[in-house]
Length: 166
Image 1 (cartoon, one colour):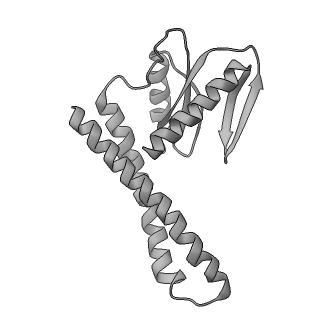
Image 2 (tube, rainbow, N blue to C red):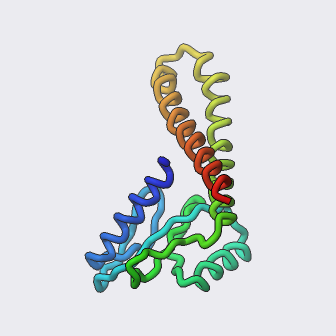
């Protein structure tokens, strides 16, 4: 699945940086910030939660911290957690299917919420105008919508697979 693959790639890269002594401090607008320290074997995992109120955010982070995870940062619903990699089996962020199911349901809702307005703008504005600058949008919008559609389909398939495992 695209999103799962992307999450694993990002987490793997962050783990490699920690092995070299560079530890994730934060993430914002496609830019990572690191702090230099001692090399460590850590596991990074990403979780998706829609915007949480302050109290909900505190409870959410406390739940993960009680399970041995440290909340590093969050950006646009994506939360970065890390944990010491002491065992040969890397720790998982979820211990039950219900939580995993909730993650992908929220992600699917967000993806659809992004796709619908873009689709409406494309059909109602972009395709209806023949201005020169609209040519760029006539090319760009289908590409963006295509990526969103792939993410929506793959997230839906992931949800179905999780439901079948239950």
